[in-house]
Amino acid sequence: MSIFDRFSLEGRVALITGGGRGLGFEIARAFAEAGAHVVVTGRTAATLDRAVAAITGNGGSAQAAVFDVADIGAGRAMIAEISKTRGRLDILVNNVGARDRRPLAAFNDDDILDLIRTDLLSAISLSRDAAEIMKAQGHGRLIAVTSIVGEMARPGDAIYPAAKQGLTGLMRSIAVEYGAHGVTSNAIAPGMFATETNAAMAANPDLVAFARQRVPLQRWGRPQEIAGAALFLASDAASFVNGHVLTVDGGMSIQM
Image 1: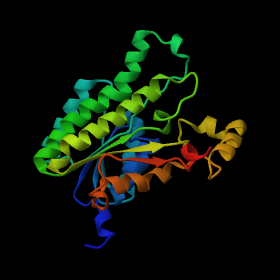
Image 2 (image 1 turned 120 degrees about the horizontal axis):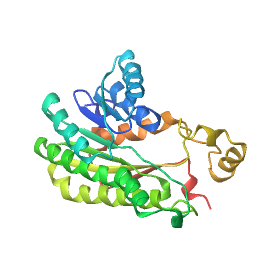
Image 3 (image 1 turned 120 degrees about the vertical axis):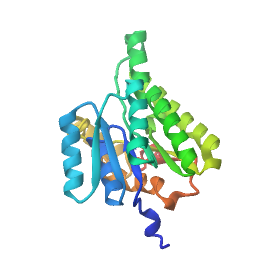
Image 4 (image 1 turned 135 degrees about the horizontal axis):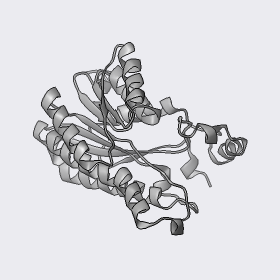
């Protein structure tokens, strides 16, 4: 098997939460180009339909699954349905993340629980069920999309970093619990990416200047630049990579 063959996902089934746009879509598109059947999830059918059409229009295999990851029961049902209809589940990418930038004192308990349910509890539930399927197969890849803010902090943004740090702990725990069964668990920690959600920020002259000063590559990341990292971790090329956080931030987190 050549090194290029080791990056192939031919015959594998991947579930990507939040796969209809942004980083999730670029991950899904890359997996499909590498041969996987991808299931993209999200709350808006029209967004998912456009994503599936873009992937299949390029010769890939994809389907949409409309549900809110905060609905834990719906997520469990989707995992079971994929396993039943496709006969396997090889890759799970927990990509969805909600963010609310406010001072901590401005949050009530329900606000906090809503964010934690979306950003962390959903990933715990999906990972638990997916890992058991992968354990039975003797092979699987779990990938959590965290953030460099899991290791960094700034005022007015407490809950999102807390949840992302929780994802890192989850990923590492799964790595040691399921590694003996052929299942690897890793994370990608993105920095500043110019996704649709961040479009206004990425176009803000002050934040463009901030990126030039703070990021060694002197720019925001392009969404497609996440794809190579995700494909590596999902493929046999990363067969001995387990419990690792791969930072994709243009060097922002290491520059003083």
